Length: 402
Ligand SMILES: Cc1ncc(C[n+]2csc(CCOP(=O)(O)OP(=O)(O)O)c2C)c(N)n1
Ligand SMILES: [Mg+2]
Image (cartoon, rainbow, N blue to C red; front, side, top):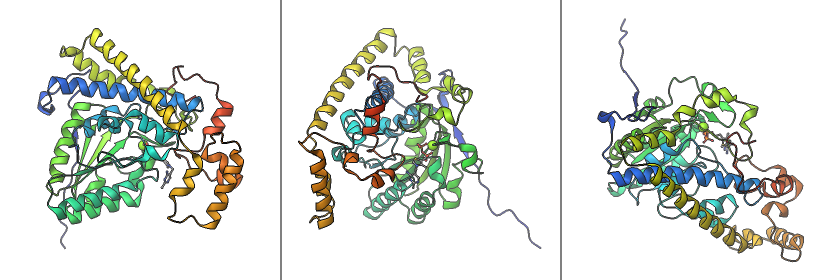
């Protein structure tokens, strides 16, 4: 009888900045001082943009929003590693990645406001993907295209821990391995898939090991360490550009609600949340930059003021754009020639709007259609919030989503 071990696998974990903000020089990526401060600014911008977006939703000025609060290092560190003309293929929680890739805040807000303009495919960024785990297949396709065309480029796709339980994600990794697709699969393991904790998502010890079955490399990184993420993402992209796809599991934490429709206090305790207080990615990176002499109180204050100013302008622009929307136009972009049933719906919708007052898409739906609304729809809860929320936009938003 023969009984040999025929394969041996292991998963590496990478951290450059520890929880106190001390750097392990051996893992440190090469980054100049200006770029370090810019990464910090982007993390702060994203955090604040998310807070403002939540507040807008609470006032009924916007629809459902999925904040990236707590995941800024995972997104900024990976998105900044990409070349501008390489495709980013996001899920629905990538505000920090979008901002790093140059997308304006008002466009993110337009998406949450249910506007077509918010889903524009611009600057090599795909629009958000709401169906969980579908977009890695798009990255596999783009990456295969790069291989066929002989291009030294890679696509990077974002998805969550929950998405790794979807067959599509495995299929995307498997086909990428088989066809040498230039793709990086960047999983933000934020410990939660709505109310499902990581421990019950899968019995696998790590998510990174899911790469093994696809025959591609899998690596874990401290996703709250922006320098560790940058280092791992650079290596992964370099490998993918040569036709060797990589799966990256970034260990992070969703510090806020799943979306503005969610209340995490129903399914997780304050103790579970506070465990991650000391690992906040923004606090850690700021401590490092202060130690390095790249930030002091004055510079931090200036960055804060610039962010507030930028966001005030961007929110004004988002609101001004929203006023231009003709909601009935949503019927015009479905078919080349609008079929009779849709035409009837359009007419009914216009009648309901009466004197041209701007109505939400939901106001034009039947009760039955409304009941079918999805969990993370970019549209849908505007009317309800108008009726129930009296919060002020400027009020501080609780991370617990209460
Ligand atoms: C195919 C599909 N199933 C279910 C949902 C509802 N849903 C939206 S987000 C989500 C959880 C996703 O968790 P994860 O992949 O960890 O991403 P995260 O929300 O934590 O960023 C679910 C089940 C959906 N949008 N699409
Ligand atoms: Mg998750």
